[in-house]
Image (cartoon, rainbow, N blue to C red; front, side):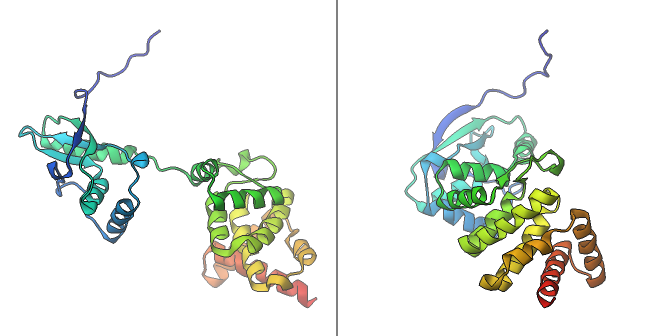
Length: 263
């Protein structure tokens, strides 16, 4: 049985190349260009790559004027360069001015950003050096990234903190990342990935503070505590000190290791 769909809306668009000077932006509904926007425009202009270019969505009004609904930053970048003669555009024909703004809203609401996991896999497929180096460190530690936000669905050795780990690796380098992932892997194997994000921050803080003086075996014994006990300690410290949970996790694990050394 054929599924019944609602009738199609609008008319099929036209694919057309337009000169940047032909295109205008309606400031009554388009976003204001802030400092971040100008930085993005500058990056697009400086690294212009037609392989990455997506067509602009453009409304042709009844007076035949052309107004960019989606692609303002790309248009501004082309105008900034001055050497882009034409831009690929998808031209549609709004019945009323309000229809044009409604399309702008729908396009921006429907846009779904890529997840950190998808971006990481894309970087691996593209041969990104940093992603490949991190992948090697993850494999060495016996860990794998997963895209699911539900920790209960993760398999042994999987963690879903790809964004945090990538930032850590970029900021602190291979040596500190190797030590941090090795300790994190011990926690994940014994306790699961429930507290992986908090433990990553806490373990990393210990690795950075003690460096080559870190006693791996002793630190491993400190970490061998049930996940629920760690989480309870983190919440108590957060409430007592009036700090966030990550800060509390760092403080608790640093204190636990310091106490182990003192003993």
